[in-house]
Each structure stands twice: as structure tokens, then as C-alpha cells.
Length: 78
Image (tube, rainbow, N blue to C red; front, side):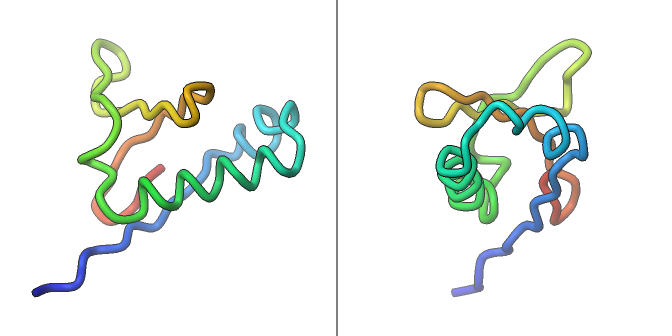
């Protein structure tokens, strides 16, 4: 059986400089770990596709609290 592809996850600069400021360190680590777990192997099979101006992007809700918007580009998740 073939080894699954592991996707490289890239984070938009705005997330690291602006959006993540509202979370404490523990919450940030918890969110990062869950994103790695869910998106590094089959990101096109989790989350829901978005529509209209966000077509091509997907949304993933984690811990019923945080919404992650991402797109898959070849072997990268951005």
C-alpha cells in the first residue's frame, strides 16, 4: 500500500501577525495541533467547500469554536 501524501501547511502572514493575538499560548498550540492532524494528510476530504467569491476554498470548524478557511494547492495547504 502506498504511503499517503503529507501536505505542507502554510499559514497566511495575517494569521500570525493579527488573528492569533487574541488566543493564549495553550489555545494556539491546541489549534495548531488539530490543524496538523486534520489537514496534513487529506485536506480535500475534510471541511466543507465554500461558494461564491470564496470558491476554491474550504472551511473547517474545530472544537465547535474555531473556523479555519483554507485551500489546497497541489501538495500544500494554505
